[in-house]
Length: 226
Length: 196
Image 1: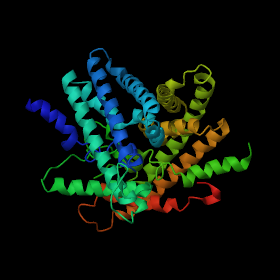
Image 2: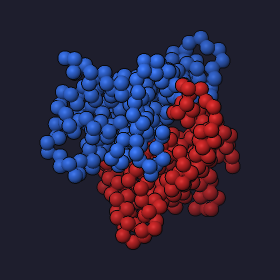
Image 3: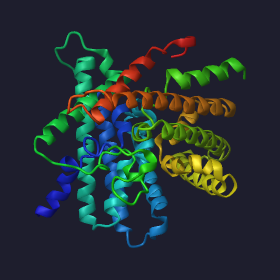
Image 4: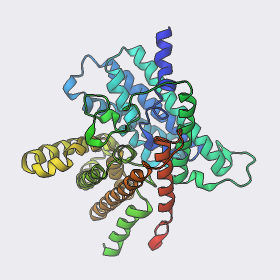
């Protein structure tokens, strides 16, 4: 029981894909100008992540190692297409707001990363929990950013007006996304550092999932973060 | 199609709708490869190369294969596979025939296969209903915009390495704040040449 709980919580706290690993940032910044968009993006990504984890885990004994990445991509792209068309049919407004970022879930490093690092090596139940945990972690981070930006930038939360008379429109514009995520990560780091946890130099590298370097912290070609 | 229209497509993509600072595509490469000037120049050249190539491959695929056959729902899956295999082929070709260029750009090629900017650009070309020539100019503009912002950003980051910075802001938060200021500066281009 403890083991299952750890797998689930891993994605939310210890290895939160956004706040700790900092991968898959594009949709987080682009789709967080309102809390509603952020929630829609979070749910869509969680659905794709969960489904791809389930299918990869079920098929892991059948997928040859050499061509596993193309197979993962096809599996992920299938679920992304399903999500895209479902959203267009039932939530046209949301689909219009998120625009090109719904099909772009297919190149989200979180999803491919989990298929490769977890689902391909673990049982079905563990992969489901991992997918849910990572998805919830992703959704929490993006919705948190969406709420902050919407309150300060438009004076509303989930389109409900709250009493802010002079919202700073800057926050819902593109620069606001960078400021918001910067503050969020700084606060998160401050909270975590006080607990004294240390992560590897590669943990925060944006290219970690695609990195071909064999040793941790040694991809000199890309000028690693010290 | 007149030249003015092509130029407005180019400049809109370069400055006004900058792919990184306004559209948030290709952020992994933007933050990951912007530590050294050499690598950011190499990365932007490789991105420009692959973007143009990917546009030249995906535009005909969509308009001449998927659309006539009513298979547009296969857009996502076919684009990603075409782009990935194209990059692999180019890499093999370059390695054998142009080793000099391969040494300069080779290491970046596998990284940008999964770069969302490339795939996002192919989708945007379709969404905007661009013609083939417009799409190519759009790709060139987007790629120059990528290069412009990553090279400027690298310059800023190299300066910031020497600055005294509060402990909790150091590292990623500072990088994001710098990007925010750049994004703010690029917002000033909005409305230039009457384009929004």
